[in-house]
Amino acid sequence: MAAYLHRHRVRYREADPMGIVYHSHCLDWFEAARTEALRISGFSYAELERNGTSMPVVDLAVRYHRAVRYDDLLEITVSWGDEPPVTRIRFEYEVRREDEPDLLVSGHVTLCFLDRETGKPVRAPDALRAALGRIPERD
Amino acid sequence: MAAYLHRHRVRYREADPMGIVYHSHCLDWFEAARTEALRISGFSYAELERNGTSMPVVDLAVRYHRAVRYDDLLEITVSWGDEPPVTRIRFEYEVRREDEPDLLVSGHVTLCFLDRETGKPVRAPDALRAALGRIPERD
Amino acid sequence: MAAYLHRHRVRYREADPMGIVYHSHCLDWFEAARTEALRISGFSYAELERNGTSMPVVDLAVRYHRAVRYDDLLEITVSWGDEPPVTRIRFEYEVRREDEPDLLVSGHVTLCFLDRETGKPVRAPDALRAALGRIPERD
Amino acid sequence: MAAYLHRHRVRYREADPMGIVYHSHCLDWFEAARTEALRISGFSYAELERNGTSMPVVDLAVRYHRAVRYDDLLEITVSWGDEPPVTRIRFEYEVRREDEPDLLVSGHVTLCFLDRETGKPVRAPDALRAALGRIPERD
Image (cartoon, rainbow over all chains, first blue to last red; front, side, top):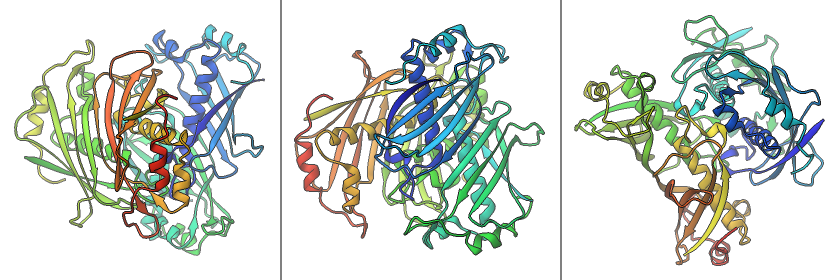
């Protein structure tokens, strides 16, 4: 299993009247983490779209273990299986405060592959399959 | 099982370059649906907080069955079990276009109850337990 | 000058650790207000886009006079000048709590008209010019 | 006049069906830019709040000069006047693509200072006034 670590500083707009992060915002961090994981291996999602493929989300799940607060500096780890994706790809996420062992949030997001013209499912692009094998463990 | 139906018009800011709703926004509709479901039965989440209890999200899951598009008029059904909640409450959601049978999005969000002062778990407030039994099937 | 009144219930995700609305969210209400104002006069922004024109924002300004809080029920008034738009259209906004005279937020948003294919400026569509004259004062 | 440069990669969730950034999101970048500008000079907004002062936004304005697109790498410059703030502070912003001269977005955000307990205006904290003089030109 390969993994990549993305950092995020919690912004004021993400925190709610409880003083903790509103639950939907961790999905934004997950997007940034998987995009940057792919970018450092040479895969550009923007280019994928220009070449006619899009990757909509088909399902996701999130568990909130401990409160995440305004101004926390987070480490979001994104990982994926060793099997190259065929029709779908599932990314797993874990969120911790920098240099702290406690798990704050965990979850997964599954995406599929569509032809942008026809809207029909297609197989995972070769460029993505190649990139997933090239990503180092840390940023 | 009781249920409530909330309407939402998809806004431009919610749609992405694929022309479909970015996946995190359905969590916003879920919040509106459960809040309004409780409101019509006389339960105010704002008042709950003023009285010292908050309801953070502990887990959630969403499945995206079909594309939701800009300007779609949605019906979000929120439902919950017949058992009164004790330490947690789980709301189930289904999203459809108005007057169309196809399921677009489904999911659940589980919340717990915390004392705002101490941050410790508390039991479901009586006012909430009473309200859940009073909500009619339709808005 | 014509005007239209749109209602919005402030959501938890819109409130910040001060307990007040994070400042960027009023732009979402402004979008909903102008879209619904045009809809009731028979003008659909979604259709405008399908017909090849888009309306990006060129400038905006907002003043925050009083705090807007979670669960407030707001009335957003959108208005526009009597002159039919040519290359741009400017909408003015005022936000108040329902049945309260105090102005909470005011502002404007100016949009222009672009050909979606070429990205070049175009004149205001006739359908929009006609619609602006047909909108009643109240929803 | 002192200035600070903050980098931001445009995310998919920020882009709309025109393929360009929805206009409200640049306010998020402005928040990140001013927070990080203050942080490198030793001023923590989170600490300010813990010490009983908050800084709500009182007005803002934004001009959109050119389209900002998904995956653009942006440089957000935040600057402020040489006069130490008394009751308000105004930050000016300019957004460009990395290493490109064209101005994409410009604007300002003005914040004031409130006692969190009483909600009454207070003078700019000394720690903020000191910090503003210490910030270097570049990150």
